[in-house]
Image (cartoon, one colour):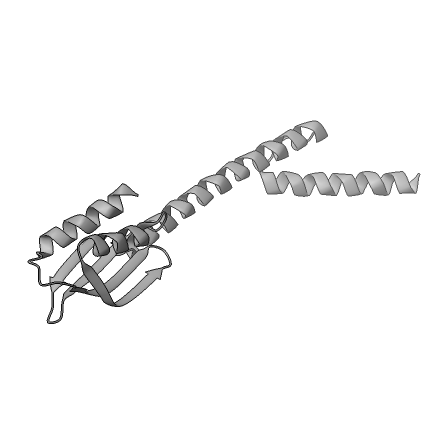
Length: 148
């Protein structure tokens, strides 16, 4: 008999704690349980909304950290300085090198990075004395990147 009373008192204390946590007004066990389930569901929805907002903020931060995409070509003393920044994926580097080969350009020095994006900085020299323009090289590289 005493054990039953202790168990009942323990259950009453547990329900009281649940009511205080979920701000439930009801006294019945079934209603308290339903209120608890509703509270858990609401918390789950809030957590999903916070996760969505966090992923959006991370995406915005990542976009701000990325440099501007594009192709820059400058005429230098020995040849051309080519800077390319674009999204990684596909065979973009191979396409760029094929463009150099088609235009008769030799890569004398290059630095390539492919962490969050493809970044390449190269010094290219014309194999033959041809009249190459900065704009024509930049357009050819841009077309090669867009083909991918």
